[in-house]
Image 1 (cartoon, rainbow, N blue to C red):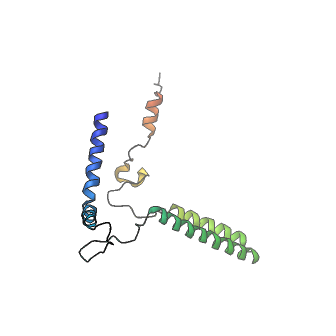
Image 2: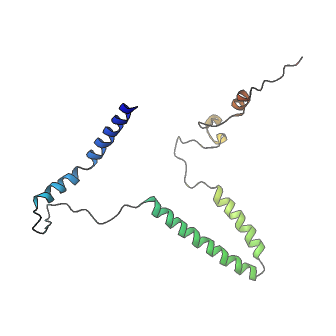
Image 3: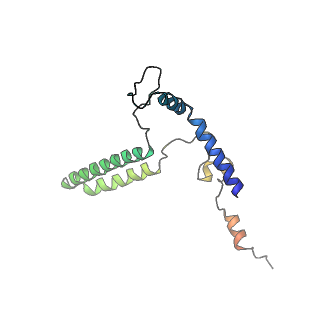
Length: 148
């Protein structure tokens, strides 16, 4: 176990060192500048931009804000339709719309990608990890009773 852990650490260290050759060049150039003199960047030295990469957390927060705005719009429309005495039809129609939107796939499946529903796969092939009735019967020890 210790050997595998040491191999893993060595592999990770090699990967991180392979990813940072540009950082080493910048560090070696900045070491040449003395501590007493101010650092002056010329056109030959690389400067890293002051931008942070887009994180999935930011996308999720944006999605939450958009969802919040949609819910607020729906509540305003529900109040408006309630004043016009069409609140119940608006509510029922919006439920059907949410069902439609919720059942739609967020993206199209890629060629060769299997569906979670085996009836949509070629030859009704189930995805890995699916519990079938035959497997369940076998695990329960169920045997059909022979006719006597």
